Length: 225
Image (cartoon, rainbow, N blue to C red; front, side, top):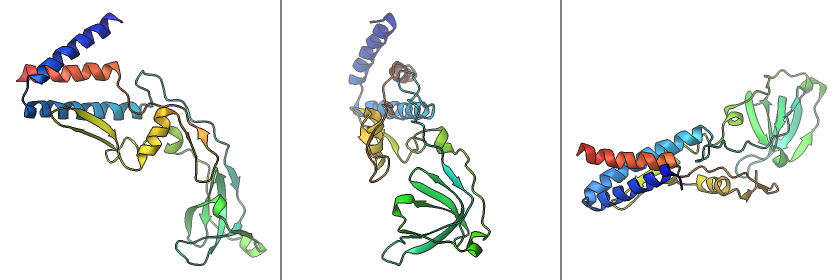
């Protein structure tokens, strides 16, 4: 054990004793401060794409380059509810993994469709083949540059405290996604696709810096009181 770690553990023991001597309202006040601070540090670390030990998150596996098309495609696609399928005519498109994205002529805008949900491919007349449509380009997006951008938002990453403990964690539907990455589990990239093993990326973790900051916050409270 290093001297720095031993000194930190000694300070943690001192802080534990000081907290035990406080009234429940006093402990609750400190715990709330600690929870909010640790939440901020965890969110900042996720934004920096780093594990608690300082190593960078494992990079995404390279994805096949999207296939681009500048010709018109025509297909039947299911509509929401029980309505009849819609005939979609699309000019200027790309296929990126399970998604087909392009300029939907009827909608007059860019739309995305699941490739495996296309009911039937339809023919395209010469007149339709020459119809005008907006252009779609293969541009990198924020999603290609950073992982877990939405997970660290306040609506997903929460903190709380009482007079006995402080906590931080994810809530809602994102919990399953977090667990897959936190533990490096097998999951389906999309519904119906074969499962893949995801690299372990520690979205939540307790670093020495976090422990040191927690001790400093507790000691500061007693210095100020």
